[in-house]
Amino acid sequence: MKPPAIAERAPDHVRGISRYIAGKPIEELARELGLDPATIVKLASNENPRGPGPGVRAAIAEAIVELSRYPDSNGFALKAALSRRLGVGAEQIVLGNGSNDVLELVTLAFLQPGDEAVYAQHAFIVYPLATQARGAHGIEVPARDFGHDLRAMRAAVTPRTRVVFVANPNNPTGTWIPPAELEDFVASLPRDVVVVLDEAYNEYLVPTDRAPSVEWVARYPNLVVTRTFSKAYGLAALRVGYGIMNEAVADLLNRVRQPFNVNALAQAAALAALADADYVEESRLLNEAGIAQLDAGLQLLGLRFVPSHANFVLAEVGAADAVNTALLKQGVIVRPVANYGLPQWLRITVGLPEENTRVLTALTKALQG
Ligand code: PMP
Image (tube, rainbow, N blue to C red; front, side, top):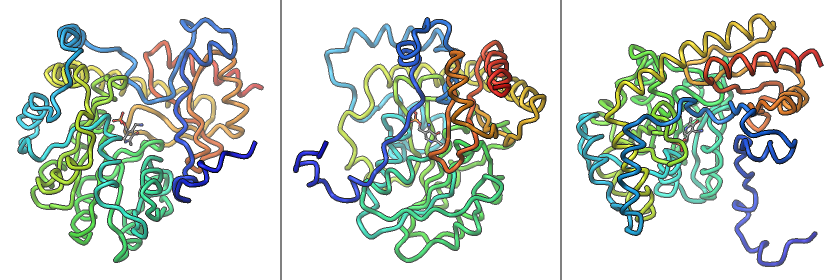
């Protein structure tokens, strides 16, 4: 059917955007295949499989009383806690409706039609989506061994480049860049180019692998480090993340954000989650064991996979569409990544041990056809 004329009035760059493909919700698969939702395993969105800790539940219960009021537009308490934890000024922190929001805010504040943003092939898909939404031109730099080719990315920067995105670790490949290499890259960029260092999976790294990226912000006023409460902190449903950056950059992002972009329950829960260091460390250790379990299972199946530094594994299964369909029929949801230029691969999020076993068993069956 021909769309109404009004739909033609949106700018070409908006009409050209491909929608973000999210992991299939459990309820949707249950409806489609008549399955009991309780029997479905979803390992498709890099979520923490543990559910929230007791402190978070209590904080939300308390915050519910104030539900008829707007949240604190400036997120005072959460920023103060982050500021103490990270050793930066509260005015250097921008809160977001997920770290996705902060990525968007960078493009809103810095990109206009004609500008360029540089990112890697197979990097998080929000970089090209947010770039295109601003009418800017995305420059995708071919990956090297599934990861960022920083030398090639540096070479791709032109006088029109305003933003460079780097994901460390990257989604969906799980690749990681050593800190020294990363800092050399940041240092090599012109200071009038914003470099976004997306550390959504930072807390899953072995502590010695983590870059001192927050300290770099003092040296590089063009650096924006983004982090999230959606992964190791287990709050994906609430949508809260943040960026750490030079105060002047934070001021710009704060001007273009919605006044109440982080809701009150999210602020209260994030504050409680931040105080529960054990939860994060337990999540990291559970993930480490889960990665080992999935790697071993994939190896037994003779499947190639990319060694992961995050909470998911990218595995080459061949006919990914057919394998994915066979998994769905068994009540197992993983993520096809054809939209990332990886049509033969599936991304499997680390679950609880029994969920990992379930996906490996289902995969064995799916591959037998
Ligand atoms: N960056 C990366 C690399 C991600 O994988 C994700 C989540 N898929 C995000 C950012 C955004 O996550 P959130 O908005 O939940 O913080």
